[in-house]
Amino acid sequence: MENLINIVSHFKTQGTIEEIKPLGAGLINDTYKITTQNNDTPDYVLQKINHAIFQDVDMLQHNIEAVTAHIRKKLEEKGEEDIERKVLHFIESEDGKTYWFDGSNYWRMMTFIPNAQTHETVNPEYSYYAGKAFGDFQAKLADIPVELGETIPNFHNMEFRLKQLREAVAENKAGRLNEVKYYIDEIEKRADEMCKAEQLHREGKLPKRICHCDTKVNNMMFDQEGKVLCVIDLDTVMPSYIFSDYGDFLRTGANTGAEDDENLDNVNLNMEIFKAFTKGYLEGATFLTPIEIENLPYAAALFPYMQCVRFLADYINGDTYYKIKYPEHNLVRTKAQFKLLQSVENHQAEMKSFIESNLTK
Image (cartoon, rainbow, N blue to C red; front, side, top):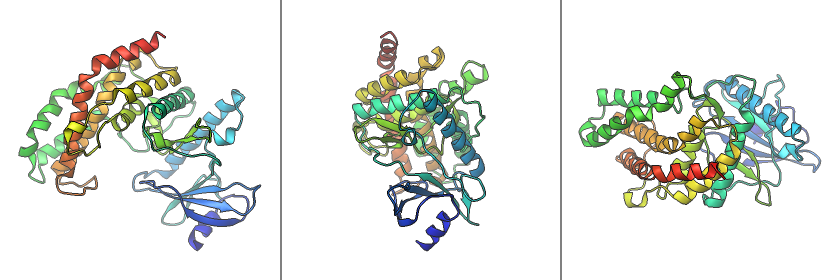
């Protein structure tokens, strides 16, 4: 507690601290709620930034400052009410930055959004809200005048992920290659098609946008009436293809099974979630080009494929990246993601038809 009070003292906050307690169950950053004594001073959120993952903290915070300032400007231009609850507000430290380095760790503070909540539930209603919120988030940032950096380089670069897999296959560190040959062959069969985004970008046909890159239902704040206030967890906001936000939500949200389901009969694409999210996304992402819209079904397949590649590479390497609960865990994950990919492939025509019907309404 004393150490945290000392950290807070380096930020330009208002009020006197009454309580500091852990907030949420985030997997990346350590987060605390700072409650102040007076009703007329705001409460705050304090976070220790995981700089093992986000190694360039200066760039990370520059991205977030640029994004929140641009969204705030858009809200003001529209004459929105209650703006302080609709965009995150980061607090300056004593040296004028939005973070503080204590000699070994990086910290940041933001104003706590009162009377707001997150939801973990993935159902058609919340999936629609998510689609609309993330589409609107991208739309607001489509004309941002500031250049942002990649907080995790090559995060959703399919060519890079295949290169990692091929290096793992060549080295065969854990001697597991023979048992996974079927999956390697299936991945390679689809490799050219799945690298389509990078190819289209090189040809000048597919732009990079500012994307959230971690689109989950619980990365939105809702008010007490159930309306979306704002998108949160902005660490991964960076230039990417719009497929990142669209495909990654469906990979987790529209999977009828678990990411590591041992019973592959459980794993399929939930078309009700797909339809709800897609409807909301198309309503929010008003800037999309025809080539981006045309390739949304590809994006739905790309992310289970990419995650299959990543789990398989880690399994072949001897489980050096993802935490595992048992020796075959990464192989089980690989199989589950491949089953989801196959289900998405089986629904391609239906997905395309649904997207087209929503554009003509």
